[in-house]
Amino acid sequence: MSLLVLLITFVFLMLASPSLAATADQWRSRSIYQVIIDRYALPQGADPTKCDPADRTWCGGTWNTLQENLDYIQDAGFTAVWISPVSQNYQGPTTPYGDPYHGYWIADATQLNDHFGTSDDLKALSDELHRRGMYLMVDVVVNDVMATSTNPDLSTYMFKDSSQYHPYCVIDWNNNTSIERCWLGDTVVPLPDINTEDPTVVSGFGDWIESLVKEYNIDGLRIDAAKHVNMDFWPVFCERAGVFCIGEVFGSDPVAAASFQGPNGLDSVLHYPMYYSLVDAFTIPGPLNTTAVSDMMAQSKALFNDTGLLGNFLENQDVPRWHNISVDPQSLYNAMVFNFMSDGIPIVYYGQEQYSNGNADPYNRAPLWPSDYANTTAYQLITTLNKFRNFLAQNSTWLYSSANVLATTEYGIAIMKGDVISVLTNIGSPPQNVSVPVYTPFQTDTDLVNILTCVHWVVGSNGTIEVEYTLGGQPVVLVPSSELPGSGFCGFSSSSSGSSKYVSSAGSVHAHNSRFTYSLAIGLIGLVGVFLW
Image 1 (tube, helix red, strand yellow):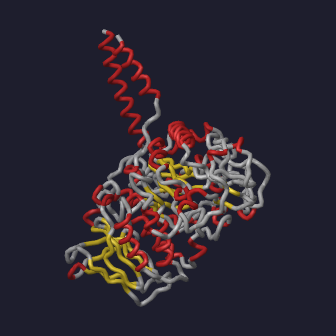
Image 2 (tube, helix red, strand yellow; image 1 turned 90 degrees about the horizontal axis):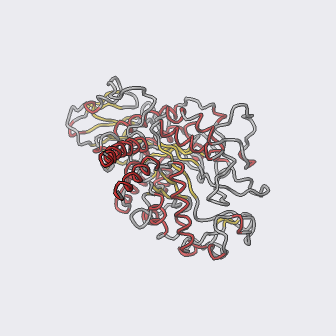
Image 3 (cartoon, rainbow, N blue to C red; image 1 turned 180 degrees about the vertical axis):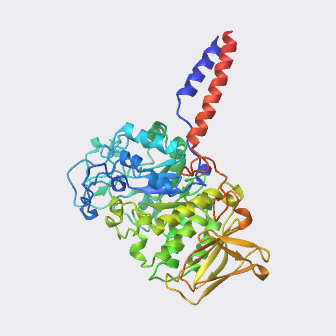
């Protein structure tokens, strides 16, 4: 009889428990659209002219307004959304640096930020993303809280004992211990550094993140200021979370960034070293140093545990908008193609597709709605790249292959991942009488198709192709025509069934796991019935 009770209990627990969350490997095929909730979309009836980023205050975006405007993201082919932190923020008077509209000034991490909605609103957003086959990534802050003095009232925070914080000190950026234990911010808005070596902090954060992930069916975490926390904290924290963890390790040093990826750290990091290399290679004006990219590709292969999980980006809330540092749109297009067609998970910061041009905080956090969510050239290119990458990601050979450099010249770089060759240039929009010759592994007369224009290319003798720029510096993405059936590209039929609007190749892991849980539970109910009979 005791066995029967255990079976019945197990069945009900299976039916009641939330579905399992996404693994790091399941994120490999995804592409991510990053959103600051307050700046993505307004509720109906709100005044669209009342959001000056210089004011550093709330503009009115919520979890509901994101949910109501997901078509814009999904129609561009994205299969995941990364949202700004959901935890309660500082609730006092406006500071000299404004209000915490961005979500990073944490007060009590265990409480939700009611500026963005209710618990039901966040659940509804998560449910809608999963209904569409998309993943939800939530930004989390565990390194610090926000204060207005270096001697704050701890009663407003999740951790209320002084032993759970490091004493105030100014960071010495040449000392790793200081980077981990001293305070970010300044004396106007200091960020008290949480003592993540303290066992009560480790267990408290573990309980919180496990609960948060389960409550809202979160698929992945972006971790703010990861390098400011002792490394051994992360495996414990991420194991409790049970989902993909990608951390912010700000800086251009690939050795430092790579040290955070692996079993003793995080699943992944944002690839800041490659970001800086892309800036060096493609921004106009700029050094136009394409070898910066090829060198970083070689270093990344040697240093990182898994380059296929790194976060590729050109913009975020902490760096200038690309359109601010480069005057030519072709520089953006070529750099974007690299991020989609090389190793790693492509990430697009909201507004990049609308040529947002703010420099530093707060101007790189402008509202999206003045753009009217236009179908710009950048939006169309992203849509094409997402559609193609989602098609390629169905083939594990492409997904797990490592990108290699085929050619590097002063005018551009050619890379190959799987059977896809991307030829990228830094010459900009004006036509130039220059070219980039590329030696490919393909046989003479192989028919290649540029999926961005549907123009056919025939491979020359010794596997050569040559990209000329007499019409301007447009990116080229070539694939053998024999691999395009089922892609929906360039006259080839699509193998997908149903609405093309829902482009996710993997579907929702929640849906898959829910079906598995349901089937298992039904089987166990049958077994219980046999016992009862």
